[in-house]
Image (cartoon, rainbow, N blue to C red; front, side, top):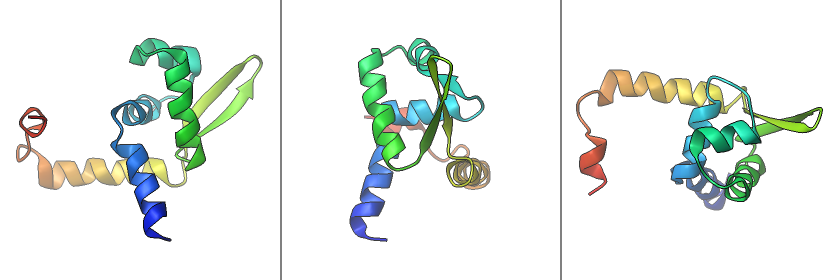
Length: 103
């Protein structure tokens, strides 16, 4: 791995739209139109973000009829999110207030 590889990976996850996509796909595979409705962004903007996430294999897609269904990479990303959830419950609860961090 190189610095650039890590940078690209975490850059994808530090983007609010891309992280929202990851959050929406955490528990359910979804087609683009449903992601658009849940997130409330233009389809072209969402598709651009999905392309970047696919480039790093954070999300994967399959075609089902006329729809493209997106899901998280279950081998790497889902276990990583579970580890982050575990970390938050053990170490971050009540220590960080996101609203204060945004100022």
